Structure formats: structure tokens, C-alpha cells
Length: 305
Image (cartoon, rainbow, N blue to C red; front, side):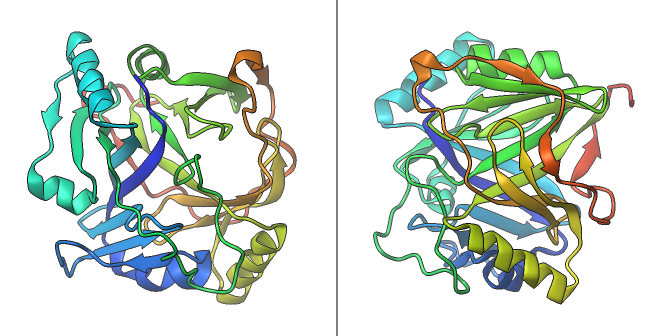
């Protein structure tokens, strides 16, 4: 399966409308027009592909869908067949669903943790259209996609097997943290587009990482959070595995945004060696005082930790 990048995220949140200011004014994202004209939906982007981040008004903070880009129609058809051969139910996207996602075609399925994923090809690109919501250098997306996501899963072994064996993602490295295990996957040169951590009885979105083009962009965003009283989940620091210099702020929808610069890349897949570490950070990334994560939900039928 030829997954090329993280294409988009779709979320539900009671505070969806707060993203109309939080996205541009704090993060520097640009507002996008909704092709369906929904008044209860906010679309944002960090490059020339409109609507990479979609937040619908809903009753709870919840990840609705993760969208993964494939190269073309043939690869999408092959991927759907591979999923079905693995016993996964696949649903072809309707014309309206494709229009809403601004892609040519998509298929959706549910992973072992209960997350909905969409595979797609032909995402809309409007060259030269991106204008940051505030003064900044821009975001790192070219060839690497939206950024990365970290998901909480109830059964780490089942999700690890699915992402690696069925979806064909490659493990970058692992970190032993707080008695648990974080596994990082890459699908392109970005060190990881997905990471998972097992917490029995729970699932949800821990954070979305947005990578900016300058270390000064990180500093200015940090100052904005201080000036506006936006709670930090983790202070400035540098990660051990991808060397990202970043901090974590709490979004209006309960999950965290890692706002970072300077990550290492997987320059040569053939030479990449998987390692494991015992700390997530070389320095910093200390608790910042934000309330507990608010984009998690219990998984029915599984024991809680």
C-alpha cells in the first residue's frame, strides 16, 4: 500500500467556532471556504491545499477521521483490495463526501482501535493561495503532508500490527515512556506522520504537530500564548528521536498542538535503523499547567487502565 502523506484531519467539537480565530491568530493557519457551505464547520490549512483541518460543531471533542494520501486512482483501488483481503470492511466515498474532502476519490475504513480513516487521491491544490493568518515564515508540508498525529489506542499490539502489516507504514523508532511504549511510523521523509501509545480502555487524539519554517515562528507563537493566557501542555524542549524543537499548547477542542521547528528527516529509507529510547525529550517539554487532555473517550467493551 503506497500511503504518501497525512492529508487531512476531521474533528468534532463543541468549540469548533473558536478555531476561526485560534487557527489564524495563534497558529498562523489560513481559513478555507467550505465547498458545502456548512455554517457549523471551520476549515483551515497550512499550505495551498484548502481544508487540511476540518472541525465540525458537535457534542464532544472527538477525532472523526484521518485522511491519508495515495498517488493515484490505481493505487487507491489496490489499497481498497488489500484492505478487503485483510478482512477490513471498505466503504467507497459518495460524491458529496469526496466534494467535502476536496478529493477525486476516497475510501473509508475503521482500524482496530475504532478510528475512522480515509484513503484518497487527487486532493485539491490552489497554487500560490496560502496566506498565513499572521506574520510568519510558513509551514513545512511539501512532500511531507499536514504534519503528524499521535493517537491513543486501547491495544497497542493490535494497532501496531495493523498499521505496519495492513497499511504498510514503516516504524521509525520507539520510546519507552511513563511505563508505556510509543511507536513512531513514517510514510515519507518526515520522521513520523503517525505515532501510537497504548492506554487500556481509551482512545483519542493526543496531538497534532505543525512544523513551521523558522525557529522564530516557534518563539513568536510561544509569546502569543503567554500574552493571551493560552494554556501550555508542555514547555519548550527538544525531542530525542526527531530532534524537533517545540512546545505544546492546548487547542480549544481538548487535544494538543505541537508547534515545532527543525525536525530530522528519513533521508534514506534503505539505511534507516530502528532504535528505541527511554525519554521523549533531550531537555525541556516539562508540564505546562494545562488541564488533562480532553479529546479522549472510553472504548466500549475494553477494560480501563
